[in-house]
Length: 174
Image 1 (cartoon, one colour):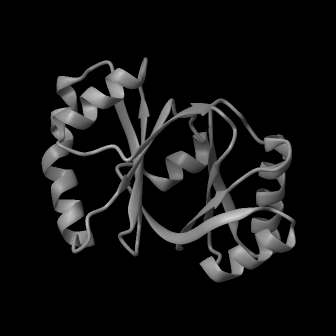
Image 2 (cartoon, rainbow, N blue to C red):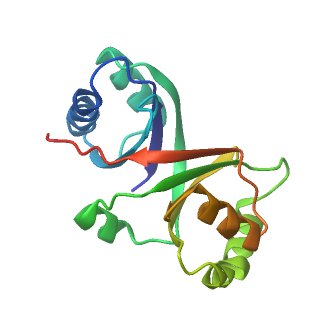
């Protein structure tokens, strides 16, 4: 099934936003996989499976959510079944605006080549990446003690940081 990233600007309690996303996903015939919330709680990155991006945008808007963007994504570096079972919390999220002309195949080859280099920064664990199918950007999740460790990990793999977010430990009670 296809995965969709919805970026939401919460204008109410984040737990309520997450419950709404889960409800919308279920009502649309999909499954709410996970959501990560910035530490400032001003942005939610939600992953839904099995709903077309346009349909998800419409349904989230109808539920009164302030949707900033919706796009198809590909999961890299992790197993979807494990994420569904665990819904692990991440410490940091890096947004990388991908350079124009970069193809998915070239991105994946680069990722495979560079990933072993993370071992040079043992205090940081790469968790997973969601790459937008339109190659606009990717979201990379890390477990790290601080932002400097994330920056060192990105330097080791020669990957820039366009936006770096510390993530809140917020879970849906839905």
